[in-house]
Structures are given as structure tokens and as C-alpha cells.
Length: 74
Figure 1 (cartoon, helix red, strand yellow):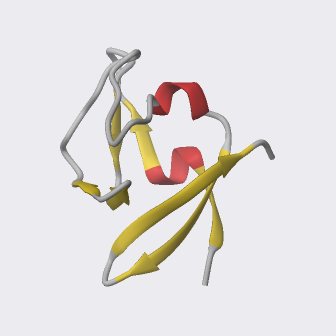
Figure 2: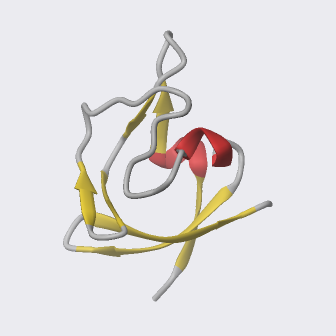
């Protein structure tokens, strides 16, 4: 079942402005685990997450991995 998640409940914004997932996420077939960080303009799984920083995330949690289905403005 697809649920709605707040972006900053899924990602941490680090002091240097980079983002890190708080939980394991799966995006377009690529898994990212907590501890990975990426800066503005860097695309992971074809997505620059900084463009969606204050959007909500549509996703499904399966086996402790959030499968990201999309983003939408709240």
C-alpha cells in the first residue's frame, strides 16, 4: 500500500547542505542506505532529491526499505 511520508522524516539535511536517508530507500531500482549523503545537483536513481526537499513522498515500506513511488507538493 502506498503511503505519504514527509520528506524530512525520510531524509536528514546535513550541516553542509547535503541530504542523507534516515531509512533505506529504493529509487528506480537503486537502494540507498542511511549514512550515504549527496549534495545539490547530484542525481541518484535519476533524481536530484534537493529539487523535492519540501515535497511529500509517496512510497511503500517493504522489508524495512521505503520504495519511493513519487513526490507531490503538500
